[in-house]
Image (cartoon, rainbow, N blue to C red; front, side, top):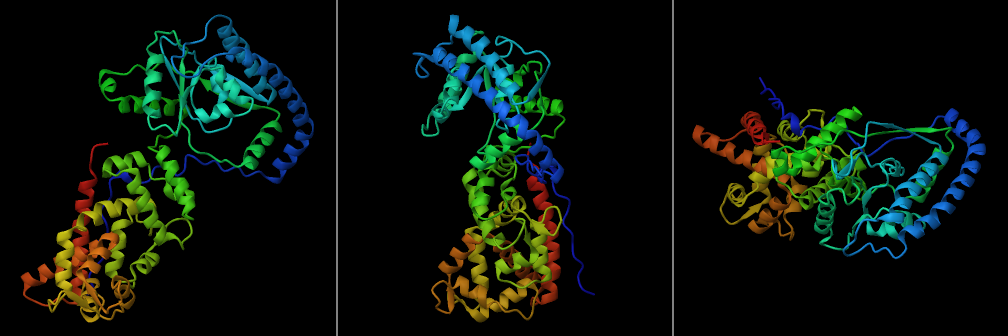
Amino acid sequence: MPPQRVFALPRQHSLLLPAVINPFLHELNLTKADKIKCFLQGIILVPLRAIFLLLVLMVMWPVSVMITFRQSLKGAVEPMTGWRRFLHKRVMTFLGRMYFFGMGFRVVVKGKQASSVEAPILAVAPHSSFFDAIACIEAGLPSTVSRSESLEAPIFGRFLRCVQPVLVSRKDPDSRRNTILEIERRAKSGGHWPQDTVTWTWQGPKSSCFRARLLLLTLCQLYTTVEVEFLPPQVPTEMEKKCPIKFAQSVRSVMAVSLGLPVTDHTYEDCRLMIAAGELTLPMEAGLVEFTKISRKLELKWDSVKKELESFANIACSCKGGRITVEEFASFLKLPLSPVLHELFALFDRNGDGTIDFREYVIGVTVLCRPANNEEVIQTAFKLFDIDEDNCITREEFSSLIRSALGVCDLDVNSLFTEIDADGSGHITYDEFCSFALTHPEYAKLFTTYIELQRYQGLQGGEPDCDASFSYFCSASHDDDQEDSTSDKKDD
């Protein structure tokens, strides 16, 4: 009776995919009726609103010039006082509301805004559209954290200068530290400075066509309702004062509850990976792995995850949807489908859906492969392949042991042998074997399983055979799942 497949044990829930697959994407699919409606309304609304907005901008421009006249944005910047503060807080706020009113926005405000003494920092979420200034206007145009490049934008760059933003420069390596220090200085002014607004964002679509389409669709609506809710101030506990990350998580949870949305650990690094995935011709969603959680649990840096994404792309470049099937997995390993290869695939496939996504690949390589891919394992595996101990592996030696390791008695491994044999000499040296193993950690599990199989057969006093190989691999897979499950259980 053939050995029965041992299914993987349930994996730790915190490392499974979040409920929200891509929180950075909103699909907009207009029906034919929607397009006709937008066209008919746009014929009347767009010209009228364009004229009104132009008139508002013609008033805002000279006011903003007066406010920012001879006002420095660098060095020891002090908050505006007197007539400048009046024009900024009253006139520009009123004109800002008129501007968005002209675009058709109907703003509903809930809750009461705390003073700058009670809450020196105002966290706004989510910052994911071109109309986030509405929240800032309703908050009385507080100071914002902004890229220094934004000041160069025509007209709107001058408007941004009015709020005395904390500037961030991507060219300055000390910019992040200086930004934190400036926010801290303003927050500790005891209400002398207005509130600082902190939001999160990502490198969104740069296409001018996309922005024009979004603006046009907005202007074509009779009105667009926007709700701005001010939540009660969140005061950190003593523990949260010692660990700012815990305080940030608490604030995030309060916002999520109010919005009725789930919480995930997606960060700006996920956006960078998403963009990198697109550059590697993968679906952009392939790069979303909840980087903060993965990096904390598996002790990975962004550069390491980016490198794994490139390796994943080498396997998944021909598949659609950014997922690897068992057939593509076997093709990448240059090995035929076999029960043992299915077992190896199942160790990566954490949710059992028959495919490996990038998140599962990173976890599998980090937890299963890289710990086993060390010098000792590579040396032991090479010695087992080198049957006649002449410090090189012939094609016959390689074929014999791979057949035993996979439990396939009739197996063509010529393509794999050729890839490892870098100099084409017809035999594999230790340097070639080691170089291939270090750059292809996916094979580490096969090597370690075969080593254990040899030890098992040595204790039994017999020769390895195909059925014994498969039976042992099933047992080894079960043990490894237990080890994997244990290793995943790190503190959140």
